[in-house]
Length: 161
Image (cartoon, one colour):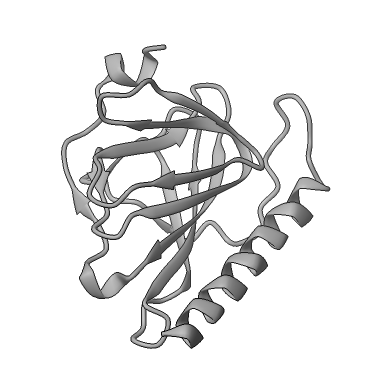
């Protein structure tokens, strides 16, 4: 158990370091985002609104029990409402967007932000209307499940303050 905690800590340190390196290359205004990883596969319309790409970085396995990937949301794109049995960590590596936990106000996200999504709590995240967003996601303890997808985020929910 201690080895798993050490491995997970090292993984988190490396991912945060990648985000900090990316922060040194920050662009301003409406210029294109800097990509650390390839865009990957296009996300399904059954789980996302708009154009979204996912690139897996670390597949879940029995040794680490952690899933890691990169998601790029084009402007206006977002996930549907969903939850994770063990929670989720988001590291925003570029762009701007939002995160909202059901029943709470929508949070604005920017490059360098870190978000913790508690276990079994309904939430969504995605890009702002005018700028795309890139995020690394970390899903721990995958042995208890990865994600439970729900309904789409309405335009009213997405555009609300």
